[in-house]
Image (cartoon, rainbow, N blue to C red; front, side, top):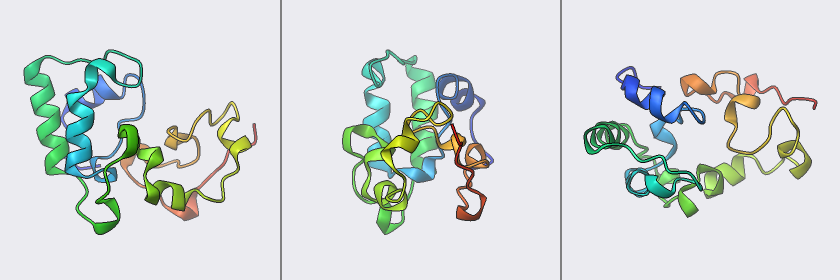
Length: 129
């Protein structure tokens, strides 16, 4: 995770889910996501203009630039991007439904360093239940 992460990003975004590393999406995907916070996955996650601008600017500055991240995230979901699907293609549907995992967006369930933006394949621990 970039060292200049605004505390606001952690308090606002990580209060409901993991504070996703900005490098998981490109700039346009982050702009789409941040412009639709009033309907953020069936929740009103609206921020005041100043806070929204601060977080949006940080996400843009630290967004992905590599070719594999060029696609727009379908429905603003990291878990629907082709690179995410490719990286997790061996994970069976039943695994996503385990109580220790709950959904593909719960990165921390299997990636112990996810909150630091590290997704090392050698450090994956898939919950048994």
